[in-house]
Length: 514
Image (cartoon, rainbow, N blue to C red; front, side, top):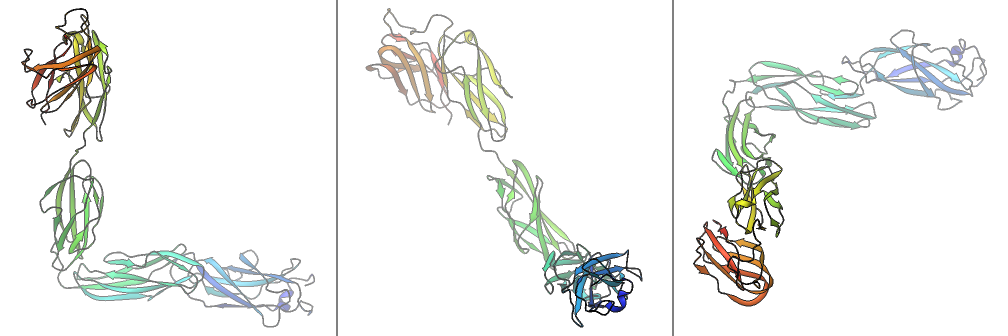
């Protein structure tokens, strides 16, 4: 196309503009479209064949004269030399649905010359999706406590991907088909809407099909028939108990039960007072998913609901007990150590919920007061205990009353002369040390060491008079062990160790109660 007077070019270009498939809409939105189609020019202003056509500019606005200065969309020409009666089309998008637009077209050659505008055509922008049925949809008369459903078809009429959701006010509800995503022109999805009347009046609502750029809202209406349903459903918990209370051993609980109503139960839900809620599966016979429990008391309320909104409830108080004992260990003094004067007795403890306190014990007797918070430490004045071997333990408890006792740690108190056996005579008597003790409810095993090979025997009894003894073991060893049996549970016993004339100081222990 040679350079020309762009104003006069319009007579030779002879552009004709035709807008097709116009659908007038009244719903507001910003996803409106218009399809513009026109006949391509074939000659220049001088009558010569058109051979360098590059593009078209499509102008559109609410003004009756949309060209030059209004919004435009540009499209490349399919060919630089159009043939007779060749048509070109362009879809305008992002328009306001229902608004009237005036549209005109110009032609541009390879060096940028632009023709004058064609004559304008006008139409209202249509939506890029459609809903059927449209207008007002009457669900008719429905008995109170019952419902009826209507299917709507949402279709992609504009191409591309149309995504959105459907909403409506009660007593109408969207049962299926929302949200929707329609990929490509002609694709569609069914949306099911339910009408569940709660009064005998006629009600109407807007059924809103909303996409990112527009909304189509047919009207739905319906009437309730009969007396209002005021009867509440009944609901019962049948598993894991029919009682109102239950003690659980696991961290979750599944409930089962039944529900009934004069018209029909529509939903069963649950909520835990300690946190969590959900819907059960089934109505007349229902089951929950596992319900998470917290330690202590949990009140689970199950609610059955009918179509009229009446509800009935059942409660179950579930107690989750803490059955896990703490762990506890003595950390000081160390086993086999010799202690004098004042020493610190320390331990460590932990629990799945929390440690309530740690009580240290000396030979089974409380040593000081219970320590409630870390660090778990008491001070022991060893001068209050006789010289010789003693067993330290620590007992940890939690708030649920679970208790655990640490392994015993044997130490030697030596505030006077070294313990070489209270009844030992002569300078050759062995030295007894490293005393260990293992106690059951009916017996005990005592271990000790000597600094030279010696025989082994225990004397024991309810007092320091003893009165009982084990069978002497004449085997000469430095590591000794003697077992006492036939003892009374939960009873204190005194004992001494004997090795080759050496006699230890008095020790005592308490048998376990279970």
